[in-house]
Structure formats: C-alpha cells, structure tokens
Image (cartoon, rainbow, N blue to C red; front, side, top):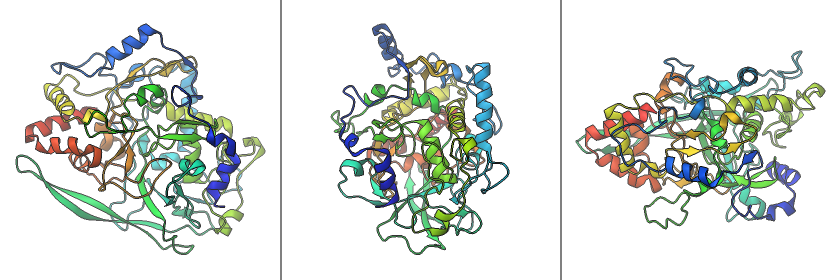
Length: 507
C-alpha cells in the first residue's frame, strides 16, 4: 500500500467514505455560524447583484477586504499588514504567527527545540521563503535558476476513481511521493533538481495589429537521486500564491459559492464551473475545497499543516509524520532524526503554533483599491463585464455571520473569484488530477491585489506556473471555458484593452 493511501486509511474510516453530503450543501464544521435572517438575505442579494451603471464606483468598492481593508502601501510590505479590524490581543497573535511564518527551521536535534525538525527533505526552510513578502512566488528564469518559490506535485492518475480514490485523484510516485523535494538535510540525498526552459508557444494577433508572443515552460526533473520516476507519473509545477484575504475566503458561505456552479452549462454561456468537494481528515466529513490551485483544501488550518509537512518536512497534529513526503524507498530519509518533542505536544510544531500560523494566514489584509473612480478604470470595469470575465471572476460576496470571528463576520468583500473549478483547455493542462479535479481544471484565482504583484514580490509572473509575464498574456492563455472571454478581449480595440488592463491593475 502506498504511503498516502495508508495515511488516509488511518485517518478516514472506510465506513465514513460512503457518507452523503450534507443535505443543504457541503459541511462547514470549522465555522461558528449564525444564520442570516430573511431581511439580511435580501440585502446580500441586492448588494452582490451585478452593476448596471458603470459611470461611478459602487458603494464600498474601494474596500475589497471589507472593514479589514488597509491603506494601499507603495512598498514591498503591501501584503504583510494585519486586517484593520483586529483587536489589540489579536494583533499580538498575528505578530507571533508572523514570527513562525518567517522562522527558518533547522535540522534536529538542536538546542532550539521549537525551531528544529527541518526535512529530512524539503523545498524551503520557511513559509516566507516561498510566499515572498506574503505575495506570489515565481518560476525559475532559466535552466540554471533555482526553484525556491515553486513546488512540483507528482502523481500517477487513477482511472475512474471510486470510493477513497475519488478524494485522491492520483497515486504518489512509488519512490518520489507526491511532491518533489530539491533540498535535504546532511546525510540524506535530495531528490534532484527542478529545471525549466522557456519556448515560444505561439504569436497572437490582436485587434489593431498588436502581436503578443506567449511563452510555454518545458519542465524537467534532473539529477534524480533515487532512480527514474514511474513511467506513469505526471508532474504539476506551481508557484506559491499570494496570502491576502484568506480568512475572508474561508468565511464565504459554501451555498453562495455553489450558487454559481453550472456543471452542465444549462445557460449555454460556455462556462460550467463546478465545486470541488474534498475529504477533510480534520473533521471527517466532505467539505467544499477553497484553497490551492485546484481547490483541494477546505480549511486554512489544513492548508498550513499540509505546507509544513510537504514543503518543509515538519510534523504537526494534522500531519504527524516527521519524515514529510519521504517514501519507504527513501531509507535514509525515513531513518533520519526528527524534532518531535514533548514540549511541542509530541510534534515538531505544536497545536498552538499551528493555530497561530493559521491565524496569521487568515488575517493578512487586503489593500484598498487604487483609482476606483478613475474614468478609464470604470470603463475597463464595464469591459470586464462585457467580455464576461465576471462569469468566473465573480466580483463580490458577503461572508457568514460568525460568532467567534467578528473580524470576518458579515463583510462585503471583492475577491473576483467564484472559487469553482473550470476546464481551461489543453494549453494550461498538466495531466495531473487532484481529487475530483481533472488535469485541465483549475480553481478561479482571486484577483484582489493583482496590481501590486511586482511591487510586493519583485516580479510579474501570472497563472499557476508563472508563464505569463503580463496580464495580457495571462488572458490570452485562457482556453476551454475561458475561451470566449479571451476572444472578446482579443477583439477589443487597443484603447479598450488598455482600459480593461487598467481596471485589473487597480485591484
């Protein structure tokens, strides 16, 4: 039995795998919800309705993160501020969580027991190393550059998965597991090196005569230390995403996200987003996936635990294996010393520390919008809707009323995402399914903070693998369900395309 299946069989009793979804939608056991009144439901419907007047900004549009929105800084710290509506005590927890997020983990055993347990194999030594200044990572510039803020997922697709397998989508590579580790501690060989070369995919002629060259990455895993990959193993490189607004995303009612799903495309608009229902090992129930490029993770706490374990090789209460993603075939890795300690509850990261990192991740503030009332930006917003970009990049939601998280409770937010899976065509497909998402399906990424990407992370790379160097390139890579919006954008005259890009830069 491969290690990932063994883990699921321990955590998820087989009898639970046949439980149906909650009658009125996926379960949300991580939230303490106060139901909306009929009057509130009507208010939410009215304020989240699409605009019909683009001559001026909508109410509250300048504050995409609701009451927690913060001023728009002009430096690299723009994504690193706490939500504006945190209490004094919460700001203290945020600061401690920030310290853990930035902590450089060291090899065990060490005198600093709260910081040891790195590896044995890993991608980077801290969360911040991948999420640069809490913003996006980047792909290597060339074959000699490192892949420090990028991970490569591995898997052997499972045909027609049923039962437990439908929550996995792919088996791990029998030797290299489900994530490639290009760093390791002394005495344990790293798995190899991630390399990329860039080639021109096509030249696209836009209305008005402009030509745009699209580049495609060609990935290879070189210097393999444990022999070849399984012939059936597919690879899926993806850069680290930005971190802002995640707690607000977690607080969106699942039913409101499901309301945008149209898996059979009954309205005939070519967009057929569907929710990704995933298994939660923490709550032992099927939940709505919200996080990750394929919406494979339902909660921020699980996301933090998964990243600690796979990216840094750190054991937490949710992912207790101190060897991380090492397989039984990697003997030195499985035998290496670890940093589990009684003072950490028998883990390398204690329950309290995991909760603090989760709190930090949940409360990184969304910056306020720029130029929200600028005529060109407003015209670009109208064109964004005309091109039907808003069919997937849904502008706004209102979060749950939450009894234990007032900072996220009943907030009007503007993430510009439906958080559903969409088939984006063969051009972006990587052939590696994840859970119930196919190798060509991707979760719609939120667009808030888009115009600050380069300011925060020092580069402009978009899409899941960083192939797009400009927003225009990112739009032109849209295929499948995004083809119609892409074609409408390409047919706009130059001034209209510039206005739409100005709108995106204002987010």
